[in-house]
Image (cartoon, rainbow, N blue to C red; front, side):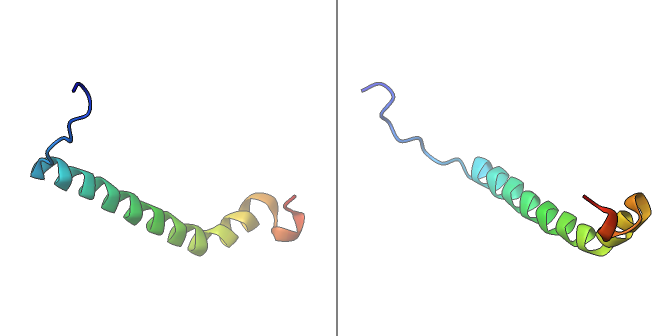
Length: 54
C-alpha cells in the first residue's frame, strides 16, 4: 500500500524539531518582554505619546 506506511521516528529528527520549537517559544517570550519594556518609550519617542497615536 503506497503512502500508508507510518514512518519511523529518527531520534535526530525529533531532537531537531524539539530544538526548533523551543527556539520559537524563547523568541516569542523574549520579543514580548522587549516590547513590554521598550514599547511605551518608543511610542513616546516616535509619535509623542499614546494620546497622539491613532
